[in-house]
Image 1 (spheres, rainbow, N blue to C red):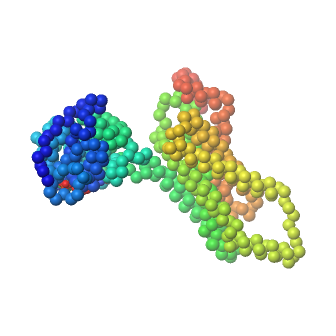
Image 2 (cartoon, helix red, strand yellow):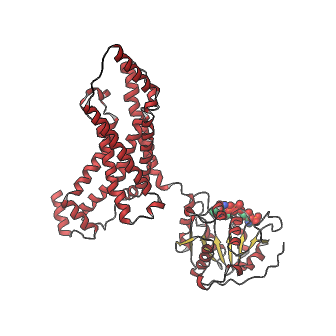
Length: 472
Ligand code: NAP
């Protein structure tokens, strides 16, 4: 391959006056996965691409139209150089400092772990090549995403750097590849950008742990109350119920508790604002963190509710149920007995199913409206109407559904096995508290004050002092 590439001038000028891509030559150091994908996209966008490689003559197939050459020659040929090499191998760049003087170096590197090095990779690069303008960018995209071009999920390129002109040059090339650029400031933000790809569902961690914890607790609680109790006290083996009956008790319990935990932090925040008389004081960290994962709590609650619906639908085809119905009918025939139609029971069961279906329908609406593609089309008022007003209505329906399930069971001593409360009763505690607190906030005196606080009004210190002295 030819190494005679004339250095082309690529001035670091604003987008509007930049040269067209056909006339620009960009350089990529490293012919690995990311280097190739990036080169492929740049060529498609109309740029010329040269690679700087340790082995320019044997570096494997390159995107058609690209050339490979030594690092020195390649560095001289372009003003913008993408460093698609792992940070561990940056040492060789130190020796290229003279050739890289004044160039824009785009650091795309990531690390395997957080805090692996004392400084961010981009800051390290800037230190070893002080004469260059380092910009951190493209590191949050995978080689695959780059190769395939921007899609809804990965349309954004984050960048940071100390030189505004250098950032402008990188912004220009990213925009020409179809990405939206988000400037995160100076190079000191590089570590934050390098940590982005290492995140593993950060907002999901707490909700998932909570869901696992609640599921495990209620599973063992109900196992002891239902299966172990029947075995120990009545000598009956009903362990087969674990698979469907027990699961179908645990799922709705976890679902309704998690749904109410979505709304509890909002209610706590409202009471805190009423107590403080201002909205300008920060909430405690735990409340902030809790509020930030409400969407995930809600989606997991919806998943558990969906499992409950599916498990309920299979009840009529279960062997145990079919056997019980047949045996019951035959014994009634043998004894020549009929059972009276119980209108109250008919009302109760129909209401129970109907309210449950309405609750689940609203649940689905909440879940769908939280999808970015849907929520982006809603105004803030529409979104908050669905998530707040319809959300509380969902919680009300689901709580009412559970009360209808319990009906008069709380009056019957046989339901308090080994002096423990039935699972459904435990599941009603948090939702009932949330609904009662929310109703209190509807009281005109509370509602008026809260609205004023949220519009910026603050209670004066004198009022605060007298309120505190009344409370103590
Ligand atoms: P890769 O496939 O291993 O390629 C790295 C390239 O670096 C090699 O092909 C080699 O090119 C060059 N190289 C290797 N050892 C070298 C040394 N001792 N001195 C000089 N150059 C050396 O890695 P990659 O996946 O393309 O990743 C490159 C950089 O992009 C990394 O910093 C990574 O963190 C970052 N990144 C990658 C992805 C991804 O999806 N792959 C996504 C975001 C960021 P030559 O043989 O041509 O010299």
